[in-house]
Image (tube, rainbow, N blue to C red; front, side):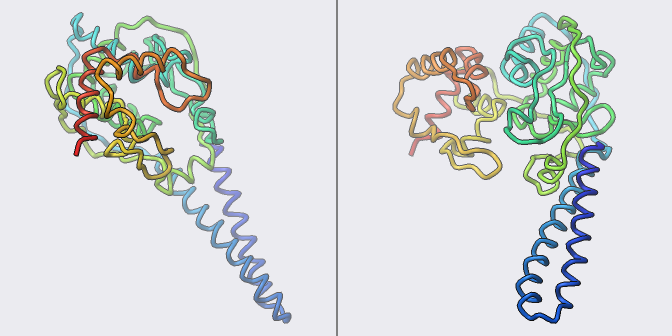
Length: 316
């Protein structure tokens, strides 16, 4: 917390100094100095004042305690449930919570470096039983996966992981079942210390941090090669954040625009689509934005359903 607070205080000090300078300039007897200098200094004062306000709002969002009610849940831990959780952890979680995009979820690298911005010390933590996660209740784990709020009520980087928020209750429980029996790996990640830039972006609403007051039930369509299940896969893979609500590449900042999937894939056969996904993952380049490895880890049924849904979305 200290990094963002110190940064916010520095912004406040600069704002006060600029306001004082603006007051002095406006009292100048030189007309040109008063108007030209006064306008620029006043504009600088307004900009730094806005940054200070956004930083303060962001710090409050990042560190306040939230009350999010969650239903009583119990993980059965059947072999089928654990297997499903293992698959979901590979597809959804390993990209951030592992340094090599594979299980176990022993903690990832710097999310600031991934974003290409100085957002502070933000690392996806170790989710194996070697950490305090083992002492969390099933409800605590359910809450943080679906809302990003931890066992102490504080927001985590998971508040921005829209895909995890789209997981059904059944799949969320499966993910918890996997985490409960995963091998313990001793690996400590740095403490969460966001920068003032992270606080500013959060306060300005440019980082998704919508925290509900409760976790609502979320069913999933029957698993199968259907358009409905493909829509669900699109949701938990968070395709729309980069490719737009209609998968046409039209997105709002701060997400980078992705390719128009309607144009790219509409004329392909199912086999061509699946082969392209697998081939792209095998030939992934450094700095590649598209998470080809995660997508390629989808099973054949999920890829077929995704293909069917994309074709419907691209249809007339």
